[in-house]
Length: 224
Image (cartoon, one colour):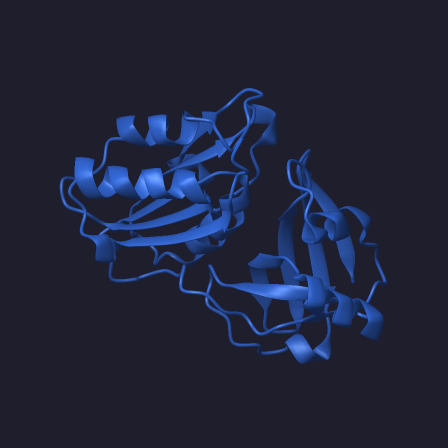
């Protein structure tokens, strides 16, 4: 572990470096799994399940940056992110996932809350130069906005203390977003039911073909 840096009150950026990461194949938007470096930690994580993290950036010289949400969730991955220190050893799995840029799209629509913001930022960075970007990112307050590539082209929605599991802010802002008449490609990430509502809006209210919507549900809110 090379560096741990706060990004917002609810997110840290973790930098992992090592020769095994050099020239690792990766497409922006993909994720990987991080396992503690000791054999005991690895086997325990594999047995109980470990959190996958979306890659913020991966440099060809063997430097990997992750941005991890540290508040509002209490899974093993969140607890690790709160306690990790410079010098800790970890192992990572190869990158995987299909929430990746389709460069031929007429424009790109990014939709997500905190847990999806990392993928949205990585995707925005990979969008071809000159391609239009639209989108909505939900956070709690304006102070919680992370710096993102092309972030000034996005709308920001605030839930102001409401739970991310039940907040209507993201979908409400998307419904008022002015988009071109023709569909682009949508990248949707975050809480499962919210992602489903976003997809339903694009399908039924805006008439987008299902094939133009790429979705990844990172977590599911507990039913009361």
